[in-house]
Amino acid sequence: MFKLIKKLFTNSKQSNDLGIQISNDETNFINQTMKAVLVQELDKRDYFNKEHSGKIIEHIFGRIDLNKGKAYLSNEQKEQLGISKRLKISEDLIEIFNKEKIKGTNPKKLLSNLFNQVRNKALEINNLRKLKNVGFKYVRLLNAGGKLSCEWCKKNDNKKIKIGDAVALIDRHCQCDFIRVTFVVDKNYD
Ligand SMILES: [Zn+2]
Image (cartoon, rainbow, N blue to C red; front, side, top):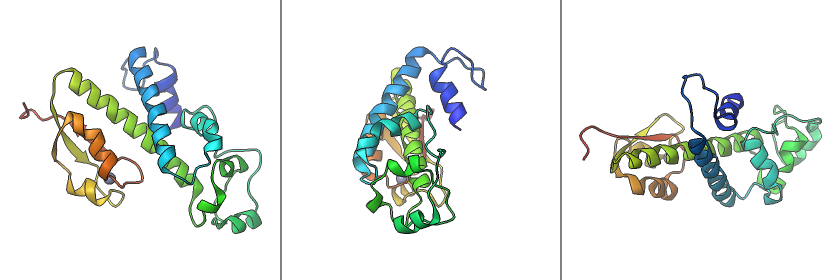
């Protein structure tokens, strides 16, 4: 996954697996949007230690991998933190969290949720921007479905939405761990 994202975002001149050239403009737009979304998301998630925002950014952009490190937590350390002994947690990973707020959680999952949210949201914003640029006014929300979707996303599957309202609606209502909806156009829309 990281390799693909890295390829998409850092080597825009090269063709990806679909043989599509991504322009530098689009790459820059997605990168800037990812940064802006990341700042918003870190603000909402109090279990991240903002002092380490720099490291989180590096991880999200695939320049480092916080899941790997020189040293990993011992069973005693995991017990103290209230983290399952089955998880292999690097010291570098645990550093980015407010330790008292992650008891009973899976820190790897919290970080991958953040990554998925930032990437998916930035890609959807880019998608909406392109649809708007070619003149569409409305989109249809499509929910990937399944257990991971929140009630609001399930309830609003197939709903017709004004392009300009799409992001605000998601921000206001979606409770998913990360965005799992996409927006498409409908040939019947004006
Ligand atoms: Zn949702």
